[in-house]
Length: 138
Image 1: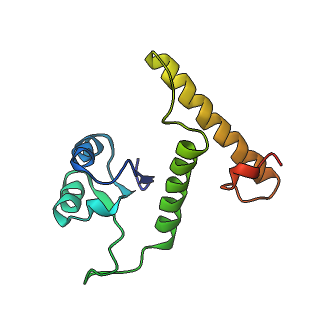
Image 2: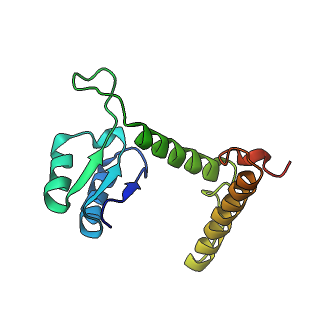
């Protein structure tokens, strides 16, 4: 996966997410990952770069002395991912499901992601912003 930009925004960078980066080092290399502000630590970024040549792009806080504006394509990608997660949680209630088995859970999540994708496609062919799925069928 050379030169590919991946965006991982699982949750706030809690201890559990920091441990997740160990898996990222094993599965990805030679790429750029857009991270949450919780991944801002230089030690984490250096470790990813040295072990797997992964560049971790993290937006700096505006009150930090090394602050610099976020590269526009990265900011747009992060916003898109955060918007999709919010839509899946709020409008499609992806968190609430009553699956009793793993296959049922996967089926329900796949159905919700498919519905979201179809609404985005409807917006695209109607020359509307793809992110405004709430009114895609009107």
